[in-house]
Image (cartoon, rainbow over all chains, first blue to last red; front, top):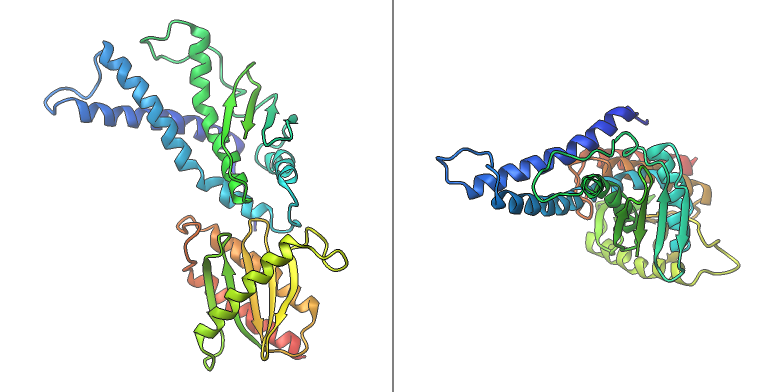
Length: 193
Length: 143
């Protein structure tokens, strides 16, 4: 009794989710700051920069908490018929191969470990990022370098997959912290400790 | 005849306990389920070389008390299913089958977006499915 979801819908949903959350948090910030008789939209200047940074921080923590529930369900369903995992390495290998294949139709390309609890998962063509251009967003204040603008904008979209990995591992009983990094578009790396 | 089934979460918190006889005291069944959790932990941490393979989900007969037999099943997400039965001769295959169907019902119950993971399962559909599975278990092993 499986249902299927269109892949491009999922792609669009994730992209829109990030910008929606950003926008709604920004809106909330301005509502809290501006007195009611002023307009709701920010009007430039240093207060805008502060608001943008604050909203980015809020967005990321919001996304992180909000997404942990998602992989729990997926993982429970996928591990029904499997024998139990004997150690962390097997669990991570399962996530790299089977779980990632179910989600993105391809396994993770590279897995490195230092055998002391840190794993690096590398995906050379991450599907949700492969359609994004490197041109950067329309955030103006304070972002001089277009390269870092693009990278920073893309980092927002990596929080969701980080949360997927983190939720999956904690459902299997392994508490961890996951961070993501884009070195060369569209490849990205996840480091789990 | 199955007396009680229970689902226990990975922090040993009960997620679902249902007893199928009116005569027995629910508290006694809770107690039996609780004690069997220790046996599950023991089996997981010290696997017997001769018996169970390391990564089997079905744990088999956990321990027999004076009236009951207790079977255990451990999923990948560390959720445990416990089955308490009064049958004297229960086939292994029947119990495995039971747990397989129970696992499927559990997965469907947990996939409910309104279900909070870690809290008790309150779905009526799940309760119905479980009682159907229990009834068919009784019929198949009686024959």
